[in-house]
Image 1 (cartoon, rainbow, N blue to C red):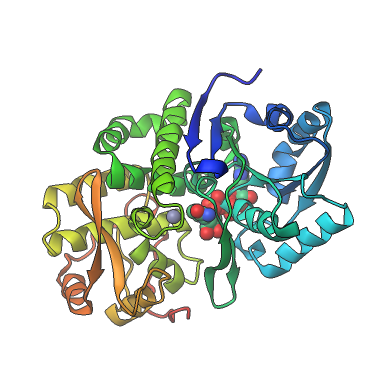
Image 2: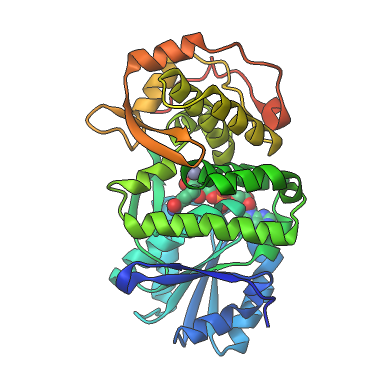
Length: 385
Ligand SMILES: NC(=O)c1ccc[n+]([C@@H]2O[C@H](COP(=O)([O-])OP(=O)(O)OC[C@H]3O[C@@H](n4cnc5c(N)ncnc54)[C@H](O)[C@@H]3O)[C@@H](O)[C@H]2O)c1
Ligand SMILES: [Zn+2]
Protein backbone atom coordinates (compact mmCIF):
# COMPACT_ATOMS: atom_id res chain seq x y z
CA UNK A 1 0.00 0.00 0.00
CA UNK A 2 1.07 3.60 -0.58
CA UNK A 3 1.96 5.48 2.58
CA UNK A 4 -1.09 7.40 3.83
CA UNK A 5 -1.64 10.78 2.28
CA UNK A 6 -4.46 13.17 1.57
CA UNK A 7 -6.97 13.77 -1.17
CA UNK A 8 -8.26 17.07 -2.56
CA UNK A 9 -11.43 17.10 -4.65
CA UNK A 10 -11.72 19.43 -7.63
CA UNK A 11 -15.48 20.02 -7.91
CA UNK A 12 -16.51 20.71 -11.48
CA UNK A 13 -19.80 18.82 -11.87
CA UNK A 14 -19.36 15.95 -14.33
CA UNK A 15 -15.71 16.90 -14.78
CA UNK A 16 -14.86 16.57 -11.05
CA UNK A 17 -11.77 14.63 -10.04
CA UNK A 18 -9.50 13.78 -7.14
CA UNK A 19 -5.97 14.95 -6.48
CA UNK A 20 -4.22 12.14 -4.60
CA UNK A 21 -1.20 13.24 -2.57
CA UNK A 22 0.74 10.07 -1.77
CA UNK A 23 4.38 9.58 -0.82
CA UNK A 24 5.43 6.63 -2.99
CA UNK A 25 2.16 6.78 -4.97
CA UNK A 26 3.55 6.04 -8.44
CA UNK A 27 4.05 2.41 -7.42
CA UNK A 28 0.27 2.17 -7.25
CA UNK A 29 -0.66 4.07 -10.40
CA UNK A 30 -2.06 0.87 -11.99
CA UNK A 31 -4.39 0.34 -9.07
CA UNK A 32 -5.61 3.94 -9.12
CA UNK A 33 -6.44 3.66 -12.84
CA UNK A 34 -8.15 0.32 -12.28
CA UNK A 35 -10.23 1.87 -9.46
CA UNK A 36 -11.45 4.48 -11.96
CA UNK A 37 -12.71 1.69 -14.22
CA UNK A 38 -10.01 1.85 -16.91
CA UNK A 39 -8.70 -1.26 -18.65
CA UNK A 40 -6.56 -1.88 -21.75
CA UNK A 41 -4.07 0.59 -23.17
CA UNK A 42 -2.27 3.32 -21.27
CA UNK A 43 0.08 5.78 -22.99
CA UNK A 44 2.68 7.25 -20.65
CA UNK A 45 4.10 10.51 -22.02
CA UNK A 46 7.36 11.43 -20.33
CA UNK A 47 10.90 12.68 -20.99
CA UNK A 48 14.25 10.88 -20.76
CA UNK A 49 15.10 12.33 -17.32
CA UNK A 50 11.88 11.27 -15.60
CA UNK A 51 11.81 8.01 -17.54
CA UNK A 52 15.29 7.07 -16.37
CA UNK A 53 14.47 7.86 -12.74
CA UNK A 54 10.97 6.40 -12.45
CA UNK A 55 9.91 4.77 -15.74
CA UNK A 56 10.44 1.23 -14.55
CA UNK A 57 8.38 1.74 -11.37
CA UNK A 58 5.44 3.09 -13.34
CA UNK A 59 5.60 0.41 -16.05
CA UNK A 60 5.68 -2.34 -13.40
CA UNK A 61 2.70 -0.91 -11.57
CA UNK A 62 0.67 -0.69 -14.80
CA UNK A 63 1.66 -4.18 -15.89
CA UNK A 64 0.73 -5.68 -12.53
CA UNK A 65 -2.71 -4.09 -12.78
CA UNK A 66 -3.18 -5.72 -16.21
CA UNK A 67 -2.64 -2.67 -18.44
CA UNK A 68 -0.72 -2.61 -21.73
CA UNK A 69 1.55 0.36 -21.24
CA UNK A 70 3.24 2.34 -24.05
CA UNK A 71 5.95 4.84 -23.19
CA UNK A 72 6.03 7.92 -25.40
CA UNK A 73 9.21 9.94 -24.91
CA UNK A 74 9.59 13.57 -25.87
CA UNK A 75 12.66 15.78 -25.30
CA UNK A 76 13.22 17.45 -21.95
CA UNK A 77 12.31 21.08 -21.37
CA UNK A 78 10.20 23.89 -22.75
CA UNK A 79 11.48 23.31 -26.31
CA UNK A 80 9.25 20.20 -26.47
CA UNK A 81 6.07 22.21 -25.96
CA UNK A 82 5.44 22.54 -29.71
CA UNK A 83 2.89 21.48 -32.28
CA UNK A 84 5.55 19.24 -33.78
CA UNK A 85 5.80 17.17 -30.60
CA UNK A 86 2.02 17.06 -30.20
CA UNK A 87 1.96 15.62 -33.68
CA UNK A 88 4.54 12.97 -32.72
CA UNK A 89 2.45 11.96 -29.70
CA UNK A 90 -0.65 11.70 -31.90
CA UNK A 91 1.30 9.57 -34.43
CA UNK A 92 2.12 7.12 -31.64
CA UNK A 93 -1.48 6.96 -30.46
CA UNK A 94 -2.75 6.27 -33.98
CA UNK A 95 -0.06 3.65 -34.60
CA UNK A 96 -0.78 1.85 -31.34
CA UNK A 97 -4.54 2.05 -32.09
CA UNK A 98 -5.53 3.96 -29.00
CA UNK A 99 -9.31 4.12 -28.62
CA UNK A 100 -11.76 6.47 -26.90
CA UNK A 101 -11.49 4.50 -23.65
CA UNK A 102 -7.69 4.36 -23.61
CA UNK A 103 -5.90 6.61 -21.13
CA UNK A 104 -3.03 9.03 -21.58
CA UNK A 105 -0.81 9.64 -18.56
CA UNK A 106 1.29 12.82 -18.29
CA UNK A 107 4.30 11.72 -16.29
CA UNK A 108 6.64 14.61 -15.50
CA UNK A 109 6.65 18.34 -14.80
CA UNK A 110 4.51 21.13 -16.18
CA UNK A 111 5.86 20.81 -19.71
CA UNK A 112 4.81 17.17 -19.95
CA UNK A 113 1.46 17.92 -18.29
CA UNK A 114 0.63 20.79 -20.65
CA UNK A 115 1.51 18.98 -23.89
CA UNK A 116 0.00 15.64 -22.88
CA UNK A 117 -3.24 17.26 -21.78
CA UNK A 118 -3.47 19.04 -25.11
CA UNK A 119 -2.81 15.83 -27.07
CA UNK A 120 -5.47 14.04 -24.98
CA UNK A 121 -7.93 16.88 -25.66
CA UNK A 122 -7.63 16.61 -29.45
CA UNK A 123 -7.06 12.88 -30.07
CA UNK A 124 -10.43 11.36 -31.10
CA UNK A 125 -11.94 14.67 -29.87
CA UNK A 126 -10.83 13.83 -26.34
CA UNK A 127 -9.61 10.77 -24.47
CA UNK A 128 -9.21 10.51 -20.68
CA UNK A 129 -5.97 11.74 -19.22
CA UNK A 130 -4.25 11.53 -15.87
CA UNK A 131 -1.63 13.89 -14.46
CA UNK A 132 1.22 12.27 -12.55
CA UNK A 133 3.17 15.40 -11.62
CA UNK A 134 6.83 15.16 -10.58
CA UNK A 135 7.97 18.77 -10.06
CA UNK A 136 6.91 21.20 -7.34
CA UNK A 137 5.49 23.61 -9.95
CA UNK A 138 3.43 20.80 -11.44
CA UNK A 139 2.29 19.48 -8.04
CA UNK A 140 1.09 22.82 -6.69
CA UNK A 141 -0.02 24.46 -9.91
CA UNK A 142 -0.01 23.08 -13.45
CA UNK A 143 -1.47 19.60 -12.87
CA UNK A 144 -4.65 20.98 -11.28
CA UNK A 145 -7.17 23.08 -13.17
CA UNK A 146 -7.24 21.81 -16.73
CA UNK A 147 -5.18 24.38 -18.60
CA UNK A 148 -3.34 22.51 -21.34
CA UNK A 149 -1.34 23.81 -24.24
CA UNK A 150 1.82 24.45 -26.17
CA UNK A 151 3.92 27.38 -27.34
CA UNK A 152 3.85 29.20 -30.68
CA UNK A 153 7.11 30.60 -32.09
CA UNK A 154 5.70 34.06 -31.32
CA UNK A 155 4.67 33.42 -27.73
CA UNK A 156 4.29 31.05 -24.80
CA UNK A 157 1.12 29.01 -24.27
CA UNK A 158 -0.66 30.64 -27.20
CA UNK A 159 -2.28 27.37 -28.36
CA UNK A 160 -4.29 25.25 -25.96
CA UNK A 161 -7.53 24.00 -24.51
CA UNK A 162 -9.27 23.78 -21.18
CA UNK A 163 -9.34 20.05 -20.65
CA UNK A 164 -9.60 18.51 -17.19
CA UNK A 165 -7.75 15.35 -16.17
CA UNK A 166 -9.76 12.54 -14.58
CA UNK A 167 -7.18 12.05 -11.83
CA UNK A 168 -4.11 13.84 -10.51
CA UNK A 169 -1.49 11.82 -8.64
CA UNK A 170 1.15 13.72 -6.69
CA UNK A 171 3.90 11.44 -5.42
CA UNK A 172 5.92 13.58 -3.03
CA UNK A 173 8.73 11.03 -3.06
CA UNK A 174 9.58 12.01 -6.64
CA UNK A 175 10.35 15.56 -5.49
CA UNK A 176 13.50 14.33 -3.75
CA UNK A 177 15.38 14.03 -7.05
CA UNK A 178 14.38 17.48 -8.28
CA UNK A 179 17.30 19.86 -8.93
CA UNK A 180 17.48 22.50 -6.18
CA UNK A 181 16.87 25.35 -8.60
CA UNK A 182 13.57 23.75 -9.74
CA UNK A 183 12.50 23.17 -6.12
CA UNK A 184 13.18 26.78 -5.15
CA UNK A 185 11.39 28.08 -8.26
CA UNK A 186 8.30 26.10 -7.23
CA UNK A 187 8.34 27.83 -3.85
CA UNK A 188 7.46 31.11 -5.57
CA UNK A 189 4.09 29.64 -6.60
CA UNK A 190 3.65 28.26 -3.06
CA UNK A 191 4.21 31.71 -1.53
CA UNK A 192 1.81 33.11 -4.12
CA UNK A 193 -1.05 30.99 -2.72
CA UNK A 194 -0.50 32.44 0.76
CA UNK A 195 -0.53 35.97 -0.63
CA UNK A 196 -3.66 35.59 -2.76
CA UNK A 197 -5.86 33.49 -0.52
CA UNK A 198 -4.67 32.52 2.93
CA UNK A 199 -2.82 34.73 5.43
CA UNK A 200 -2.57 31.84 7.91
CA UNK A 201 -0.86 29.68 5.31
CA UNK A 202 1.56 32.54 4.59
CA UNK A 203 2.42 32.66 8.32
CA UNK A 204 2.87 28.85 8.28
CA UNK A 205 5.38 29.27 5.44
CA UNK A 206 7.21 31.94 7.44
CA UNK A 207 7.48 29.49 10.35
CA UNK A 208 8.38 26.43 8.29
CA UNK A 209 10.57 27.77 5.48
CA UNK A 210 13.71 26.10 6.85
CA UNK A 211 11.92 22.73 7.11
CA UNK A 212 10.53 23.19 3.62
CA UNK A 213 13.98 23.84 2.22
CA UNK A 214 15.12 20.58 3.84
CA UNK A 215 12.21 18.75 2.21
CA UNK A 216 10.74 17.75 5.57
CA UNK A 217 8.07 15.13 4.70
CA UNK A 218 5.04 16.27 6.76
CA UNK A 219 5.69 19.94 5.93
CA UNK A 220 5.95 19.19 2.19
CA UNK A 221 2.72 17.14 2.32
CA UNK A 222 0.86 19.91 4.16
CA UNK A 223 2.11 22.62 1.80
CA UNK A 224 1.17 20.70 -1.34
CA UNK A 225 -2.25 19.87 0.04
CA UNK A 226 -3.01 23.49 0.99
CA UNK A 227 -1.86 24.81 -2.41
CA UNK A 228 -4.04 22.24 -4.20
CA UNK A 229 -7.02 23.11 -2.00
CA UNK A 230 -6.66 26.79 -2.85
CA UNK A 231 -6.19 26.13 -6.57
CA UNK A 232 -9.12 23.67 -6.59
CA UNK A 233 -11.42 26.14 -4.90
CA UNK A 234 -10.49 28.96 -7.31
CA UNK A 235 -10.88 26.70 -10.36
CA UNK A 236 -14.22 25.33 -9.11
CA UNK A 237 -15.57 28.91 -8.99
CA UNK A 238 -14.09 30.02 -12.33
CA UNK A 239 -12.94 27.15 -14.54
CA UNK A 240 -12.32 29.27 -17.65
CA UNK A 241 -10.66 32.30 -16.11
CA UNK A 242 -13.33 34.88 -16.72
CA UNK A 243 -13.03 36.36 -13.23
CA UNK A 244 -11.66 34.99 -9.97
CA UNK A 245 -9.11 32.64 -11.56
CA UNK A 246 -7.14 35.70 -12.65
CA UNK A 247 -5.88 36.08 -9.07
CA UNK A 248 -3.61 33.09 -9.76
CA UNK A 249 -1.66 35.44 -12.01
CA UNK A 250 -0.32 37.43 -9.07
CA UNK A 251 3.36 38.15 -9.73
CA UNK A 252 2.97 37.04 -13.33
CA UNK A 253 2.36 40.40 -15.07
CA UNK A 254 5.90 41.57 -14.33
CA UNK A 255 7.12 37.95 -14.03
CA UNK A 256 6.13 37.05 -17.59
CA UNK A 257 7.65 40.30 -18.85
CA UNK A 258 10.97 39.41 -17.17
CA UNK A 259 10.91 35.90 -18.62
CA UNK A 260 10.35 37.22 -22.11
CA UNK A 261 12.91 40.05 -21.76
CA UNK A 262 15.47 37.45 -20.67
CA UNK A 263 14.40 35.33 -23.66
CA UNK A 264 13.47 32.52 -21.24
CA UNK A 265 17.13 31.95 -20.45
CA UNK A 266 17.84 34.29 -17.55
CA UNK A 267 15.09 33.18 -15.21
CA UNK A 268 13.11 30.01 -14.94
CA UNK A 269 9.41 30.70 -14.48
CA UNK A 270 9.21 30.55 -10.66
CA UNK A 271 12.23 32.84 -10.29
CA UNK A 272 10.60 35.43 -12.53
CA UNK A 273 7.37 35.10 -10.53
CA UNK A 274 9.34 35.69 -7.29
CA UNK A 275 10.74 38.98 -8.59
CA UNK A 276 7.32 39.72 -10.13
CA UNK A 277 5.61 39.41 -6.73
CA UNK A 278 8.19 41.63 -5.05
CA UNK A 279 7.71 44.30 -7.74
CA UNK A 280 3.93 44.05 -8.00
CA UNK A 281 3.57 44.38 -4.21
CA UNK A 282 5.88 47.40 -4.21
CA UNK A 283 3.93 48.92 -7.09
CA UNK A 284 0.70 48.25 -5.18
CA UNK A 285 2.16 50.05 -2.14
CA UNK A 286 3.11 52.99 -4.34
CA UNK A 287 -0.47 53.12 -5.65
CA UNK A 288 -1.87 53.01 -2.11
CA UNK A 289 -3.30 49.48 -2.14
CA UNK A 290 -1.15 47.94 0.61
CA UNK A 291 1.28 48.72 3.40
CA UNK A 292 5.05 48.95 3.44
CA UNK A 293 4.98 46.22 6.10
CA UNK A 294 3.30 43.76 3.69
CA UNK A 295 5.91 44.49 1.04
CA UNK A 296 8.74 43.85 3.48
CA UNK A 297 7.22 40.65 4.89
CA UNK A 298 6.66 39.15 1.47
CA UNK A 299 10.09 40.17 0.21
CA UNK A 300 11.74 38.56 3.23
CA UNK A 301 9.94 35.24 2.73
CA UNK A 302 10.79 35.17 -0.98
CA UNK A 303 14.42 35.92 -0.15
CA UNK A 304 14.51 33.19 2.51
CA UNK A 305 13.19 30.70 -0.03
CA UNK A 306 16.38 31.38 -2.03
CA UNK A 307 14.62 33.26 -4.81
CA UNK A 308 15.87 36.43 -6.47
CA UNK A 309 14.17 39.59 -5.20
CA UNK A 310 15.70 42.36 -7.30
CA UNK A 311 14.54 43.65 -10.64
CA UNK A 312 17.49 43.34 -13.03
CA UNK A 313 18.75 46.51 -14.61
CA UNK A 314 16.46 47.29 -17.54
CA UNK A 315 14.77 50.22 -19.28
CA UNK A 316 11.19 51.17 -18.38
CA UNK A 317 10.15 51.19 -22.06
CA UNK A 318 11.30 47.60 -22.50
CA UNK A 319 9.50 46.46 -19.35
CA UNK A 320 6.26 48.21 -20.31
CA UNK A 321 6.20 46.86 -23.86
CA UNK A 322 6.86 43.33 -22.55
CA UNK A 323 3.95 43.84 -20.10
CA UNK A 324 1.75 44.88 -23.03
CA UNK A 325 2.42 41.53 -24.70
CA UNK A 326 0.90 39.64 -21.78
CA UNK A 327 -2.06 37.43 -22.71
CA UNK A 328 -4.12 39.06 -19.95
CA UNK A 329 -4.00 42.48 -21.62
CA UNK A 330 -7.59 43.49 -22.39
CA UNK A 331 -8.23 46.16 -25.06
CA UNK A 332 -4.70 47.47 -24.63
CA UNK A 333 -5.07 47.76 -20.82
CA UNK A 334 -2.48 46.00 -18.67
CA UNK A 335 -4.18 44.22 -15.75
CA UNK A 336 -2.35 43.30 -12.62
CA UNK A 337 -3.17 41.48 -9.39
CA UNK A 338 -2.34 43.67 -6.41
CA UNK A 339 -2.22 42.67 -2.74
CA UNK A 340 -4.47 44.42 -0.22
CA UNK A 341 -3.45 42.43 2.85
CA UNK A 342 -1.55 39.15 3.16
CA UNK A 343 -4.17 36.67 1.87
CA UNK A 344 -6.29 39.15 -0.08
CA UNK A 345 -5.73 40.56 -3.56
CA UNK A 346 -7.65 42.32 -6.30
CA UNK A 347 -7.25 42.82 -10.03
CA UNK A 348 -6.67 46.39 -11.22
CA UNK A 349 -5.96 48.09 -14.55
CA UNK A 350 -2.58 49.81 -14.64
CA UNK A 351 -1.81 53.17 -16.19
CA UNK A 352 1.56 53.50 -17.91
CA UNK A 353 2.22 56.78 -16.11
CA UNK A 354 1.71 55.22 -12.65
CA UNK A 355 3.97 52.28 -13.38
CA UNK A 356 6.59 54.62 -14.81
CA UNK A 357 6.51 56.78 -11.67
CA UNK A 358 6.91 53.69 -9.48
CA UNK A 359 9.71 52.34 -11.69
CA UNK A 360 11.81 55.50 -11.54
CA UNK A 361 11.08 56.12 -7.86
CA UNK A 362 12.29 52.70 -6.68
CA UNK A 363 15.13 52.49 -4.21
CA UNK A 364 18.34 51.37 -5.89
CA UNK A 365 18.75 47.59 -5.71
CA UNK A 366 20.82 46.21 -2.84
CA UNK A 367 23.49 43.52 -3.17
CA UNK A 368 22.51 40.23 -4.83
CA UNK A 369 20.97 37.71 -2.42
CA UNK A 370 20.11 34.00 -2.67
CA UNK A 371 19.98 32.82 -6.24
CA UNK A 372 19.87 36.49 -7.20
CA UNK A 373 23.53 36.08 -8.05
CA UNK A 374 22.29 34.68 -11.36
CA UNK A 375 20.69 37.99 -12.23
CA UNK A 376 22.35 39.93 -14.96
CA UNK A 377 21.66 43.10 -16.81
CA UNK A 378 18.92 42.91 -19.42
CA UNK A 379 19.84 46.20 -20.97
CA UNK A 380 21.32 44.62 -24.09
CA UNK A 381 18.44 42.25 -24.66
CA UNK A 382 15.57 43.04 -26.99
CA UNK A 383 11.91 42.44 -26.15
CA UNK A 384 10.83 39.05 -27.41
CA UNK A 385 7.76 39.77 -29.58
N1 LIG B 1 -1.20 24.48 -17.14
C1 LIG B 1 -0.98 25.30 -16.13
O1 LIG B 1 -1.90 25.73 -15.41
C2 LIG B 1 0.43 25.72 -15.83
C3 LIG B 1 0.75 26.37 -14.65
C4 LIG B 1 2.09 26.67 -14.38
C5 LIG B 1 3.06 26.32 -15.29
N2 LIG B 1 2.72 25.69 -16.46
C6 LIG B 1 3.74 25.29 -17.43
O2 LIG B 1 4.59 24.35 -16.79
C7 LIG B 1 5.89 24.42 -17.39
C8 LIG B 1 6.93 24.48 -16.28
O3 LIG B 1 6.79 23.32 -15.51
P1 LIG B 1 7.99 22.81 -14.58
O4 LIG B 1 8.48 23.96 -13.79
O5 LIG B 1 7.49 21.59 -13.92
O6 LIG B 1 9.16 22.50 -15.64
P2 LIG B 1 9.58 21.18 -16.45
O7 LIG B 1 8.41 20.35 -16.77
O8 LIG B 1 10.44 21.63 -17.57
O9 LIG B 1 10.48 20.40 -15.38
C9 LIG B 1 11.64 20.99 -14.89
C10 LIG B 1 12.84 20.06 -14.99
O10 LIG B 1 12.75 19.06 -13.98
C11 LIG B 1 12.92 17.76 -14.55
N3 LIG B 1 12.18 16.85 -13.68
C12 LIG B 1 10.85 16.66 -13.62
N4 LIG B 1 10.56 15.86 -12.59
C13 LIG B 1 11.71 15.53 -12.00
C14 LIG B 1 12.04 14.74 -10.86
N5 LIG B 1 11.11 14.21 -10.11
N6 LIG B 1 13.35 14.59 -10.55
C15 LIG B 1 14.31 15.20 -11.30
N7 LIG B 1 14.07 15.99 -12.36
C16 LIG B 1 12.78 16.14 -12.69
C17 LIG B 1 12.38 17.92 -15.94
O11 LIG B 1 12.86 16.89 -16.77
C18 LIG B 1 12.92 19.30 -16.31
O12 LIG B 1 14.26 19.22 -16.70
C19 LIG B 1 5.89 25.64 -18.28
O13 LIG B 1 5.79 25.22 -19.63
C20 LIG B 1 4.63 26.40 -17.87
O14 LIG B 1 4.07 27.14 -18.95
C21 LIG B 1 1.45 25.38 -16.73
ZN1 LIG C 1 3.20 30.48 -12.65
